[in-house]
Image (cartoon, rainbow, N blue to C red):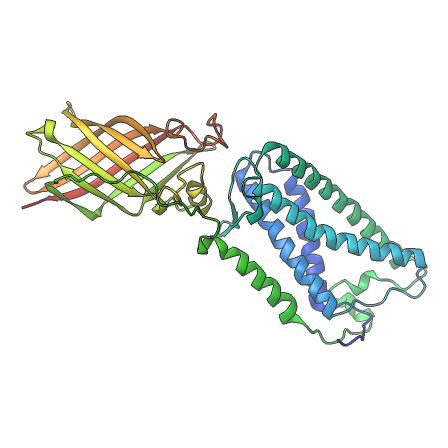
Length: 396
């Protein structure tokens, strides 16, 4: 490696320096202003992971592109202090995000991480089974102290730069300032090692981000859920015109989603309601809300646990006619828990074609959904409404 040095930092080093400085300051503010705000909490995690990989890239870039020497007139103890501050910065810029990643991984709330609302980020693999309030609280305390250490280092760093800029030695601040200020010192040497610094960091990021897509860490247990019963149905559901949706509230705001894959066996005759039977089998892995954070949360063990329990079933029985339509008892079996609630529906039969609009309300507490992180329904309301709309064709 070429050992030449320049009196000015490279353009890439300058850009990384100021970008990371801005991110660190913003992260400190965000850390103090994200309580009970899920969007800010996710943004904090997203920027933390960004800082981690930028710090790795910057460290690699520094090895390939040595920084300019310190001013010749700087006393030895100040040189040592400057080196120690830089070392501490790198240690904290890598260590604090790693600590935050570990903290999220052992959190008893089991909140997934979705970077900037788009990329599912896995928990650290060796933390399986370590989640708990005690460990989480300890790591959170250390994480918070790390933020104060960053603040102290920022103050020392800025104070040192300003002192040397206006002191008797050659200034150092202008070496890191972009634009016209850079013309007051000698030009930089050609940059080198971009592929090593940024390519390596991007490859590592991509490898980790791909783990959820590969299903690593998912349960190896066989798919759960009861085996579907056989019903001699007399209707064929038109799945292109049918939908099972669900809705509720999170932090006082409405959310909704659909199940992408499901099947139904329908035996129904308005003239023989005592013999009517319906069974619906839902692929729980296909739940979609349009918000990736919600989708990742629903897959988790305390919610649908769809890696282990791939299916849920709904059995309808006890049909009866009401003044405005029909009513039946819907028994939902999910993760081995069965809950029965009334389901009301209207049915418009025109010849051999039928249109359905049905609604039922379930308690997520009764179904043991989200009872680890939100047993009191502080964040996610207990009531979840399920609606089924669709069309069917009478079998010959």
